[in-house]
Length: 333
Image 1 (cartoon, rainbow, N blue to C red):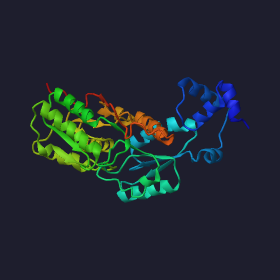
Image 2 (cartoon, one colour):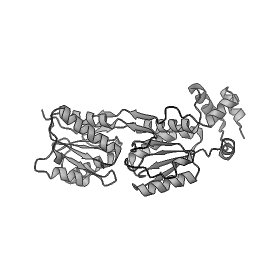
Image 3 (cartoon, helix red, strand yellow):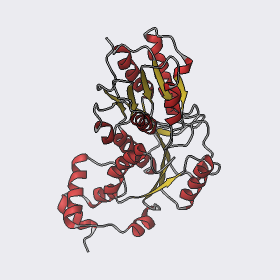
Image 4 (cartoon, rainbow, N blue to C red):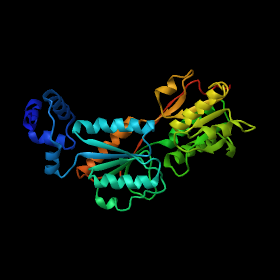
């Protein structure tokens, strides 16, 4: 069986450097690459039980998300694994099923499993029912959503500017009747995306039509009723901005069922990029969130906290979005 000394010899670094790498500490990028290559070449595997006894760690990270079926969450998890897998951490993924009560239960479950840290996308931004959890000392990093009155590390996107850029693009193509399928008002991301929408209309002197603002749940069936509500208006919007993946998918589903052509009968711009959206003709305009990068940043922050680095707490990182504009938004000029 290969040992840590064998890895250090092949990588031409000290045993201490290899140990720090295996225990999740930040080391020089060049050393990190050499150690990883040595580990793969030697097929070295560390003993997690022995490591746990030495370091008082379980080398297990909990990931708690609102629902397993969320495409955005699975993409974030890929980023988390990219950082944690080389360090031989195990990931325990839990779903709250969009329930605050289940979220609290799953936090307790992860605490009792003695995870070293938790990365969580909260169900709601109004409260975090985690009585007894914070006293455990287990580091917690939020992703995508902040929670009111909770000072926690977090990695989120610039949702206001993401939405603003999308609506601005729609306006620049000649649209003034722009509907929005906004998310639940108690969710941070939904609030920010609605703010971006309203700010764009205000900056371009377009009067806000309250009938064009409809809310939908961010879940598997969200957006169907909202889209139909907008299309049933006597003065229909010429373009619709849907603010997350499920609402965009469901808007497209209703359009197909009703024989409406995207970019001709109604313009559509969505949120979050998937291969599905690019299979349509025309491809769907979308605001792309750097989901993989969110996972990477969250994992790196969590490793710092696990390693005892409490500097700049609470650290909130905001990542930029990108707009992909296509002919799914018709030019009216």
